[in-house]
Amino acid sequence: LESATPSKKQNVADNNPTAAGHDGEKNSNNKYRWVTERQLYALRSYRSALVPTSLKPSTAYSLCCLAQITRKDLVLDPMCGSGMIPLEAATGLGGQAMAGDMHHIAVDAADKNTQIANRDFKAACDVLRWDAANLPLREGMIDAYVSDFPFGQRCGSPKVRVQLYQNSMRELARILRPGTGRAVILLLWRKAPGILRSTFGNWLAVENSFQIDMEGLIAEVMILKRTPSPAPKPMRQTRCERDAKRQWRPTADSTTAQAADAV
Image 1: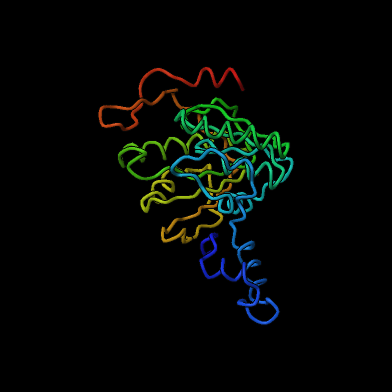
Image 2 (image 1 turned 60 degrees about the horizontal axis):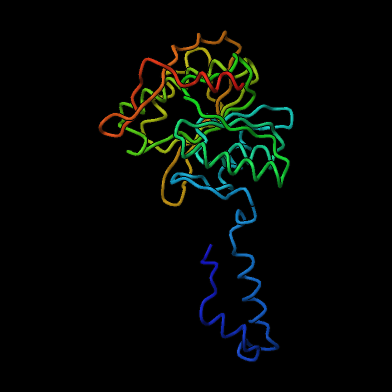
């Protein structure tokens, strides 16, 4: 899309119908183009608080459609950022959504957006602060898992990300409903698909995997299905803190207790 701000020539045409061409036809076309070029997600009132890695609602909605979400489904995004994926699942597809993140800024943003969505669209969505690798959720309770996995230096060193991906995938296999559970994961780190595949075991199967172009960034979308195999055992609960290099590292105690009490 071009810029939504009309150019100087467009402004002149708007103020002078004779300069727009025969019977002001060009003037009318310019006004129509300006209206249609506004980004559609601007109409979503819940896109209020954002974080640096917020997804566009159109991308979030597409991921939710790939997960084949229905009104009966309980949808989870454990690394939700500003909450666009669960809010699109709740408002656009009618699912019941749960969202969470480890960083308090993301949780605050998602909570603010959720309150607006609940008010304006009657969306069924809740936000908690938790560790995606140690979720305070029962085994096999999630119907659809849709998430944009973190990437880049802001999310820690490659070693930290590898550990996060591996632990999160094991937790995904534990909470996803056996036999019918579906997962759609967006990956923007080129090493991520290989890391994820190494953790599937007998619990997850790849239904499809393809690449997309996100404004110059090549991302991979993985569509997974939960097999009927018994769920893995829950991992030892840990929490993460920032070390001297501002990277996430696991520690012995847990901060998920409060979230667990709330579920």
